[in-house]
Image (cartoon, rainbow, N blue to C red; front, side, top):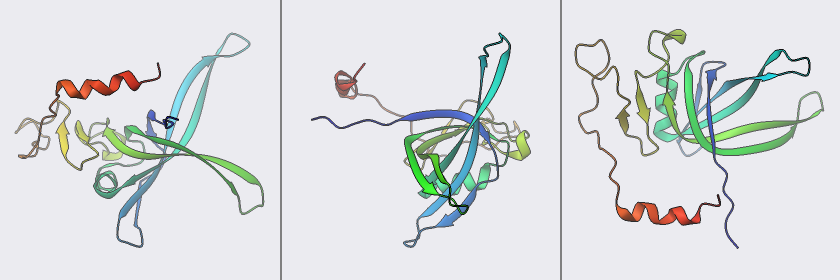
Amino acid sequence: MSRGFSRVVLVGNLGRDPEMRYSQNGTPITNFTIAVNRRRRGTDGNFVDETDWYRISLFRRDAETAAEYLKKGSKVLVEGQLQIRNYTGQDGIERTTVEVNADNFVMLSPRDEAGGGGGGGYQQQSGGGRQSGGYDDQPGSGGQAPPANRQQPSRDADDFDDLDDVPF
């Protein structure tokens, strides 16, 4: 029997500043919420805006980077595994929460927008390194210069062998 696959990609705005804490073994963990907006046509023919909220958890170096650069209102792309949990609130009512254990995120807001959040186009990779997103990486442009030890991803023919396992 094959394993299941749970993957989600969300683009939204932070609803509050990130909160960083440390696990018992010292691993940094950052939590924040993002609002994902969508527009649909209602039964009366008018457009209706809807917002879904997701709780995001980042770990290790990603957690430290998010806590340093993201602010309330920052636009961010998050990739990770979707997790749905049920719990009983303080008022005794059973509730459901949708969480994402993120393993990759991209800061989409320029530094001067959304309370200074965003990383000037730098993409945080799950390995802890940064890769330039294409803007703000020129010295003298007012942005931060790209790290000197930046590595470009390499692709071999073997990288595409696992595409036969995709269920669609």
